[in-house]
Length: 382
Picture 1 (tube, one colour):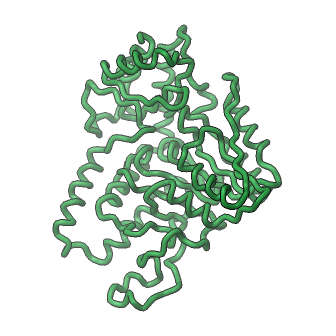
Picture 2: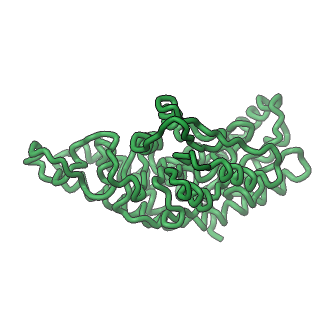
């Protein structure tokens, strides 16, 4: 078992940050890369044409390695909503069709589809969470499968629910979506980097992922990985660098209709961000060195510790068999007690999130037993 990696982060010893699903802290090495990259802009004569292209290709390769996808199918985006917008614009919807999403899904996965339904007459089909606790994850997955029918045009969901880590059976749901010809979109923001994801097995038409959570990168940069269904779709914007032969700066006004190959046409404008791209690249290298299995094994031990500390209380965790080890919810919390719980958490410098009716706990390799003990004490004392 790997030892705590807290030494790689600037987290004070008295801070118990168990909130990576909110935002990861930056690794020290990523912070340093960011500082050096900011300084580079002070000497723009050192920024050559290759700086607009080569770092992006490395980022694509690293992303492809992490999820078992061709680098050519990776695009650089600023946010999940940007990738969802590309898919929504490229998908034909009509009256009588439906778009299937889990209930309480993250808003960035919902809003573009809701707007498309509003303008086309299609219907959003929000599949609610079953009320029962035991077997809730399996029952929710079955509800999603049962909701996909001959009129389903789109299935759009997160790989794990953002409030409590409930894992969705992406391979089964994707298979069902393909059976009815539906577009299949996955937001991997809350799992990719911490839980194994195989693009070739899941076969989504698009995987979108923000970079500032489990990829350990900076804010405002992420990736979208495209299946063959969308590779020839229209991009959300038409920027100069996505066009064929854009490397020839002297002849940019020789306007081209052809795009750069693969998913590069979908890259956001000013994709070559000379600060954020090197930072996310450095973060991905560390994520790959650790590997998602290491994160899961480590966080499983912390989860088991917390289960033991909560044993005998009225509080319950999402069942370990139905959630990821790195992200889980604590339920049966008395809402009237939330203010006192918040005070106890603040008093002990414990950082978690309140999401829906759950207290969301999301550890990483920088956490340790002291962090879990501090959280358990705060939530049971309050």
